[in-house]
Structure formats: structure tokens, C-alpha cells
Length: 348
Image 1 (tube, rainbow, N blue to C red):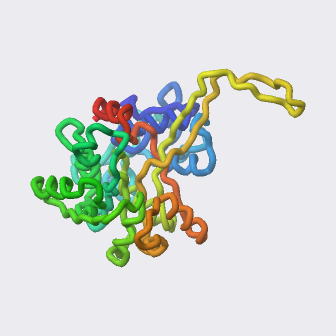
Image 2 (cartoon, one colour):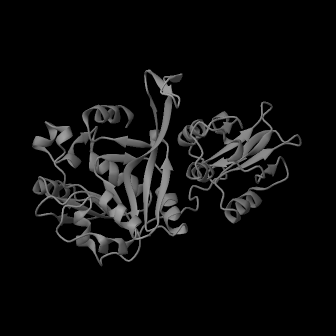
Image 3 (cartoon, rainbow, N blue to C red):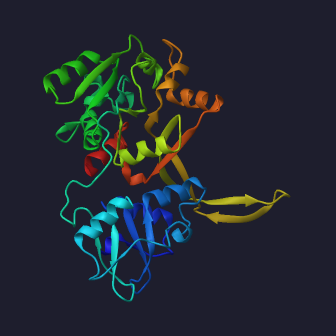
């Protein structure tokens, strides 16, 4: 049970990684005596990051200090299940008379394998798979990048599987480079989910071919690059997009960069003020997964090379809302270049 415990002085980065390792989507904040101080969810962390909190800041202002809890010996499975359902929780801690955490309940621990979750059955997925994959040569001299294997599956099958796990079952794949190989592969695969191909007669960038889908969708949909694999709660991402009224939501991975030198800081006179030894900087990196509203497709010019960054800029210029959904860097696997591909083979 200790893997869901976190101390109030822990950093946001540490808490994100702890949440990433547990399937419970909730951490219990405890003191040194294991007394319950509060609960911390991925939503709590996300709100803190979007409010400008540094990843190195402590969670002391992020977690809920008035958690829902159960008292040992004073609840039934039925009452616990009702509480989970009514408060839309994934986990409830169980404490003794001294407020010490001794256990916790979840849908699974109550014997419910069918935990109530939002399924995305009717949500469409677009996979941008038309690029040449130059960074993965020589493989991509023979195969289109989405068909490069990682263990027993191709890259694109790993991507699709994550959406299938969240209930999506209808995929639109943009193709250009070696498109006949892509089509033949899926014809041979004969999957039990829907696959539709969008053909580019010439390369149109990471968003140009989305214009071909204008008028085909009646609700927000996912768009993903074909060289990234993201382990995240896609239903939470979709709900985040809807709840906040975004026109576009992009997934951003936390990244820490360390400069391996002492950096010189100058004062106003051009003299040395001090030296920062190996400073660390935190960034949110565009991970290549998005949720788009159908009406933003109207902003994409027809038959024009157009990147999704151009679309996002246009959405912002039109004073529409672009949201950011932060995830931990361990949840993002970039397989678009050799160094990262080799890491992906080790991680998957």
C-alpha cells in the first residue's frame, strides 16, 4: 500500500511519477505516522501545473485537505460502493480511530471488475501517418514509419491499442508515403475495428489532410502523430476538453532539462553576479496528441501544406480556446528517431 502514499513535502514531479506507477489515480497524503492528511489526484496536479506551479514545488497547496474516508469497521461494501459512485471517486482510504490509514477501497477491491468509466466508443481517432519517417532510415526506406515493428506489433498498432483500451473503435489514417503498403498491411490484418484511409496526393504536413474530414464528425475527436505512444487516461483527456470548453486541447509532457555547466548570471553593470551550477529547467513539451472540435477544420486551407502548429496559431488568433493537458514524461514515448526508438523497445 505504500506505493500510494506521499508526503506533503513531496514535489509535484515526484507525485506525478508516483501516480503514473499506480493504477488507482489517487495518492494518499500522510505524515510520518501514516496519519491521513489528504488525497491527491491527477486532476489536482494538473490544476496546479496549469496555475503556474513549478514541477519542483511541493504538493502542500495542491492536495485536498478534506478527503472522503471510511472508518474501520463502520462501513459495508454496499455503502463504500455507493460513496465511490456518488462522489465519482476511484479510491477511498480506510482509517482507524487515530486517523491512521490501514487500508483503502476501490471498485476492484470491492469485487467490481466493471468499474464505471467513461468509454469513448463513438469518439473518432485520426492518425497522421503520411510522413516519410526520414529519422528512422534505413527502416523507412523499406517500410512506412507506422509499420516499423516494436516487438510483435507495429508502431501504429501500439498506438491503436491504447485507444481501443479506452473504447475507441473507429480510426481514420492519413497516408501518402508508401500508402499501398499501409493499405495492404491492414487488409491482411483484417482488424475488428473500423479503419478508413485518407489519401494525400502530395504531402500536406501534420494537419493539411484533416481538411478532407470537414463535415464528417459531429463531436470532438482525437488526432495523434504516428510516432508517439502515450500512456494516459484518454477519457479524462476528452472530459477535460469538453468540461473546459476548449476548441483544441493538446497533450503536453513535463520535461526537465539540466545544463551540465555552471551558467554565468550578470548584474546590471555587465559584471558577474553569481554562477548557477548545473541549473535545471522545467518545460511542457507538445507530445503530439490532440483533441479537436470539428468546426476548427474550417480554418485549414484546402490542398495546402499545413502543420497542426499553424492550426493552433490560427485558433488562438481567432480568440478560440486552446487547452493544455499535462502528463508525466514517463507516459510519453517518442519513437520517431533512433535514440528514442531504442528506448521504446526497452520500455514496451
